[in-house]
Length: 353
Image (cartoon, rainbow, N blue to C red):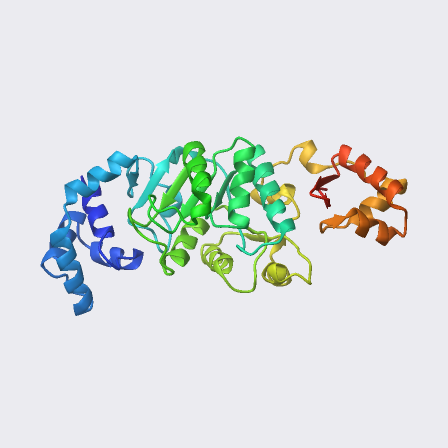
């Protein structure tokens, strides 16, 4: 029953992954717990005192029972459900907390990551990648953050898939709060994972640590939109350390949210224009439908489609680009929308393919 001791150790104040590995080195979890109680040697005096006082207040059995009551599983190396991707990792977790079904980790996995401050186009691309990769039998892994992460998971769920969410708080502390329902949906359909114990708040240091787990679980990492610094680039660095391929979605050179992804492309990352590119990188054969969207429309419809471009535009903007009356342009837009080339929302037209 080493799990209960691991849970207790992980619950100590300031106990991160590196410190937990240090405490467990050459010791069983139970031995490590008793050493901490009397004052673990090898850490600063202030931390030693803090751990010792906290350990004397923690009821190990009661804390374990809370996990069982909440349906939170504790996965540890060598035990059923443990993600095999962690076995050879340079910074393996000592345990992970899980809600959902660990067996969904079987098969190919793609991490879709990006900025919280994404564009409308970036959000839609992430949603489409999540949907199309899921339809092709790929598990979508992401961090359940606002922006690109959440959109990728929404796409995976819309395709009836089992996405994998890796979070930086305890599984009872939803962050961001706006994603309460998304967390529940991911846990019900797929798997939620965290290295943080129950009750852990969204402390800044936990997220780079979380990002290394996303990279470790992925066979390929796709960055949809990213600024030149931030969490997405932490995930990229972790992926490169683990020899995971990194792909990037090309973006406008005028968009700050694509500065990081365009820099990745300039540095040699492969482009991810759609799910087909990612499937090829995984060594999977795209379906006929995924390989080809059919020939581009010709004539006036083709001119209108080209005028829409790859950023959302209004009817007036499109007509102005064509120097054409609104009526005929609106008719062509309706034709393109009916053919699946565009979608229209709140007066904005967006190209889909």
